[in-house]
Amino acid sequence: MSLILAIDLGSTSFKAAVVDRRLKVRGLGEARLEYHFARGGEAELEVEATWEVLRRAVRGALQAAGVQPESLRTATITSQAQTFTVLDRGGRAKTRFISWQDHRATTACSTLRRCRSLANFAAHCSFSEPLPALQISQLKHLRQAQPGFIKEDDLILKLPAYIVWRLTGIAVMDNNLAAMSGLYSLVYRDWWPSALRVCGLRREQLPHVIPAGGIARRTTYRARALGLPQGLPLVLAGNDQTSGAFGAQLHENHGLLVTLGTALVAYVCMRRMPRPHPAIVRGPYPGGLAYCLAASGSGGNVINWGQSILAGCGTDEEFFAQAARSERGARGLVFKLVRDGGAGTWHNVRRQHTVADFARSMLEGLAGQVAVMVRQLGGAASHRPVFAGGGGSRCPLFVQIVSEALGVPITTVSASPLLGAAMLAMASSFPAKKSAKHLVPSNGS
Image (cartoon, rainbow, N blue to C red; front, side):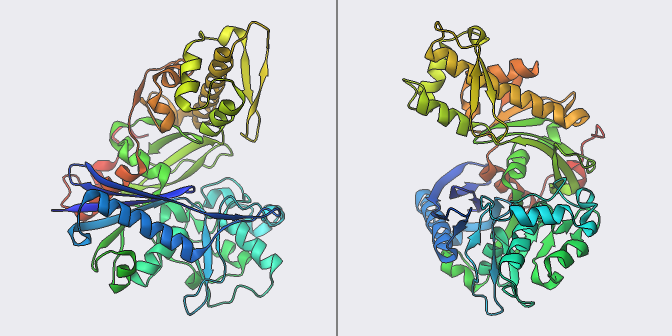
């Protein structure tokens, strides 16, 4: 039996799934992460505890599937983008994993924005400017806060590269995630010398980079610590949005994927790398293609906030049920999102407005944000079929409201990062029915 182990290294929890060649999930495992937060903006994860979280997720998936590790044909990893650690020459972690949620690099980020050698940052990276969450900003902060802490023979490994290193002894990551670090150049298709100099790093301190969807290495005896067999190919599936988009087959249907999750994302696959723009994120897509996306921090987190303040809305189901009792336009009640995506404000509030109107107006406000994001993608999003995934896509009313905001019909899809990663593993490890050239859209987009 040929089975795939798909791993999703999320921000809240790690998930694992055993998937067969028909893309049927045979077993799921999940384990939550425990963060160390501090007032100074610290958001970190203990390295060994994080490895144990992964081990529990993998073990849970195998047990749920009722299979032995030797039944696996390949493994694949999709991941959050920025979380990383520093290893000394002996392989010992010198820091906890520093999360993308860590806010200590604000001052370092301002320094990078004024750096002349990074004046063309947008041309090289997925983002248009250095941001506090990016790895380049976090590393600059470490240099400033603890001079001499990072030695010239230390390794700087993002979370998925660390997992590959633990399983194979060699650090490897994909170009999709590398491009989101601020250290990798989309122009040179390699680590960016200017960014490395700014951070005081050598190229040898960073992982080998392969195309998204490629095989990093095969597991060695080291994989036994995770309960996996030796000789298992490891396929790297990029960030979770990309693996979800691959699962939705955007490279074949030339569609626009709207993710209605904790955050809102509008994502398209393109034949060529788009030009940098302040409103979009761009980067490599499997098969030699490219992607661009627009995102908002609003989404399921805003709905959760609404549930906490609206009577009778203790769960998602109750919230959506309340919204369904109102009418289109929420009887004039308008919900506007605040800029940081944390919550929002209501306008035109009248005494006759009910809980249902407040809930409906929130969904319409979020749908309006989706419409803004699609406009930010510009011509890249025009004349494409629209698909919706994420937890919010399971609510027909929410999908309908988004459809009305966009003025086009929407088809719901799973867009599961785990299944998308499994599909990439099939394309990389099993005899493929289509070669990479068949993944290039024929419409020139």
